[in-house]
Length: 215
Image (cartoon, rainbow, N blue to C red; front, top):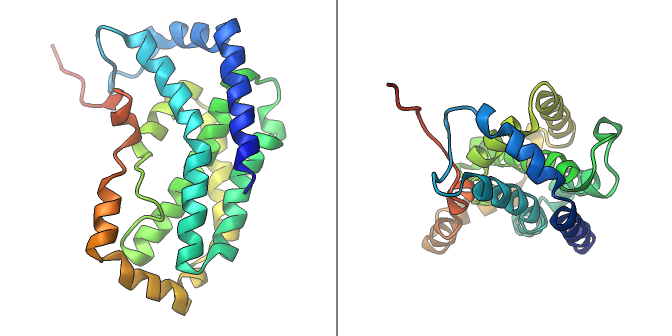
């Protein structure tokens, strides 16, 4: 994994945003159009949304490194690593679907692809092993990012993720003896304690989903 290159690319985008403010202007324009289920701190809605996007993007290298390490421990690095490398390549060599997107705006799209790839892999782990590949819950964060990106483009990204995982990680991967051995270790107290130390990403950032309060 070439996550140091990802971190450098992300830092350049953050520096660019600090001077240009282009994504901040886009987010400002969306504040009044956000879905009512997205709950932001009333005293700093703009800042919370900007921090959410920055952290959502910045967390990608850590998530990919963690997923790769756990896949190695589970004995299926050869099967999982191509999926993670694809997520990495979304940053380093963006697909043509990203054309015209720049700076942190582009990295939000690419981070969404990467997080959704890991979410899809996690879903397959849960089905077969009863636990995710990595315990960081990005589901709510991905829903929020989906809305910030907007439809139909976010739906196109979802479709790309689905096809990639379908091709690279079929059910036979989880029948290997090494995976079944790993499954037995998942229920250990040490593993369960480690899982609890990874809170929901969106909750860390003060951005939540909730039912709108009716008048």
